[in-house]
Length: 433
Image (cartoon, rainbow, N blue to C red; front, side, top):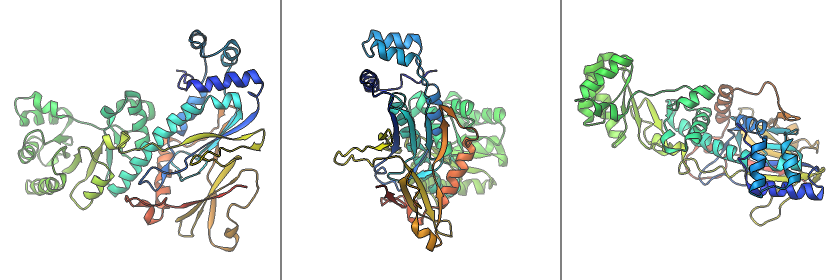
């Protein structure tokens, strides 16, 4: 499907004016960055890059679309002719998926003519802002879970299409699986799920429901034990599956005390290997509060797919260069740095990240002059993503990006992993003149 109408009308208005005055073919560079991280966040996670590249590839206008735009007076004949032949033919560079970013990190750079690059703003930002927000929320929850798996269960709290993208981004952020089958089919995200309360209520009694589920899925299944009374629910679960019962899930109540009681009861019944899964509006703070309790896995939904738990990444798409000349916005509180930029990150010998360094791409300046006289190590962050409108070969897979994020999280200073409010995990030094 074409992504061309996933845009704002003013982009086509600007295009029409630029075509009329002859400026449409000027060579331009647009950059995606954020001026600040969301309140309470100490790092950002790049997610959605692969979806952006697909959206750019699919950004084409067919005859019916163009006719509709003309009939509604959105475009004139000159713009209609341009759009009928539109294909992005420029270059895209950026941080790979699964990379961390900070204020003013140039996490995506789009180079091409004004006409072909300006129309991409909305679709690029809608994907990156959404997916990066989800991935950062997921990464915080995974960090709080301290190695215990987290399952994404938020589809019913999101738009049906956004739910699929959310599941992908949460998996990139470190979640173990998703309940969303479309995400499994489209992106290969592992799926998980057994039964809801409705299945228990369908049967005449809880034990009959559990026996039916075990008969269908085997004793290693997960039984939802809080439809009625949790203590009796665990008794019925063990009666249905025996000591081979895979897990019980608790979806309500004061999860801390309940988890302790459930563990004690399971152990007393001989089910020492039966795991305890908890869910129910969990966020990173709730997960962290359960760290010392006998919980084996978490299910998270609302807090990872909605704005309350995953506030927008605040990314913007700004013109920074025209025909090689730096241009910059000077508006108060919304200023931008002119000129195309690239970025590096410095590390201590221990591997701990120290600083994000943003420099003019054409400067040829050592990104960290101090590196020659210190033990700091520096690595570049941007990689080629598209060349002359074609996605470059060999980009990381979703699983590779997921592994990259895991390794990147390990490089953060301890303060950067705190859930409390504070400064970004590392400072950004902008060396652009």
